[in-house]
Image 1: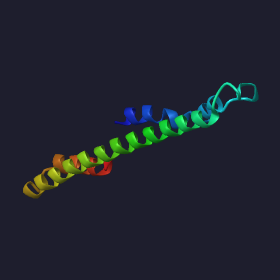
Image 2 (image 1 turned 180 degrees about the vertical axis):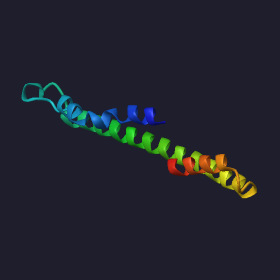
Image 3 (image 1 turned 90 degrees about the vertical axis):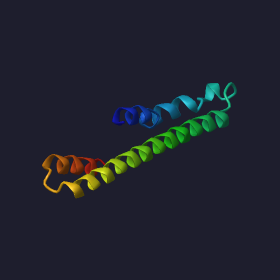
Length: 94
């Protein structure tokens, strides 16, 4: 998931470059509609943010389910050190 998030952040990381290539210079003002290109850039940013938020929430949901299951298992086996270690690892992830 970390690699996927890194890839999805590319547009945010390159925002200055994106703005420089989206907004036309004085010589290209008549050839490009800056309003439309800015709208497209904004929409791509919003889509990227929405997708990233969905993936993060999905990851939290799945990890929380694993934590819940591990807690239930721990209630049955109090002395299992490996189970406790795995539970703490998953809790840290959340």
